[in-house]
Length: 428
Image (cartoon, rainbow, N blue to C red; front, side):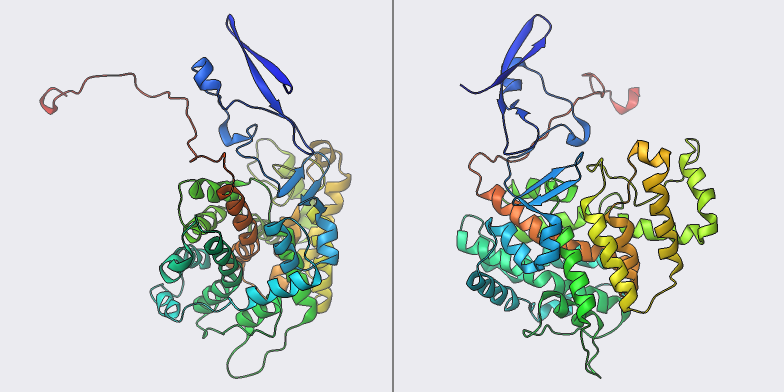
């Protein structure tokens, strides 16, 4: 028998199994708690609850560690490319040269979307938020590709996975082009994943578009950094939707909707708006003082993280990428970057920030980088969705193939009215 722990309540006690992971905290198995005690646990936000068993991503917030299938995020971002990371997340190991070539080929040959999707887009207003368009268009894929919605068929699950990874950038570029009134640009099979995406966003039919390799590599690295992040809100949404047996396109659409929330995918946009609000380096002390004032609602966006209690391991990579892009674009004296650099210096040395571990996170730099690459702020979360799709798919696939998985059904602590009888209208 494995390790156990005792739970005492009143005059009673229960013996609960303890399960150990490869690394990280052990868990108390409370799956039979209600049956044995008649009680639920209360855990708002599920911050102390493991909702599943997973082999995909590991985070140690105290140490500032992020691993994809055991590989440190900085090594993958420095030495690999995004599709290699996709293969790793989906299949569990880095691909051989032959496997990588085959995987790249399969993804590339799925980048086009059904031609009727172009007419589908015409139903939106031109000023629609690109994330609104993404939620609808991703969900609509199940109406166009119903030959890959049978989740009990491993082949159909594989085809759906390839389609989602391949078509998401095409839909994202279409959403961008539609909101700025330009014609859609078809994908090109001789370009790599991120180069193809940049071309679909920025090319126009009347002239040739040449992809800048520095920008393509920077975006590829951004996609790697955002590819998965364990059981976050949107990933948990995908798993919960998938637990009902919903088709994969609907599940990913649910993830996109959750990601749209400003507390999740909109953090880099909020950080950029904050830098603009500060305005100049000279104004920084005033805003830092406001951030330290408990009675002032102002918050420094892009600092600290719900999970990472140490330096965000993705932030250092993002900082280097940010400088590369600004240098390539000839942006030497960007006021927002000057503010960002000074804020970072303060956060890493000021006793208040150090004590509270309010270190710069990935959102702090990614907004500046994407702005320099020419993306409007309302596209930032769309790019996040493109990157996170492979993580959602890998987590969904793992959940479907887990024999212990059940339909998600969180419990509650009911604090409403006690039982009462209906009162006729005439007596109210």
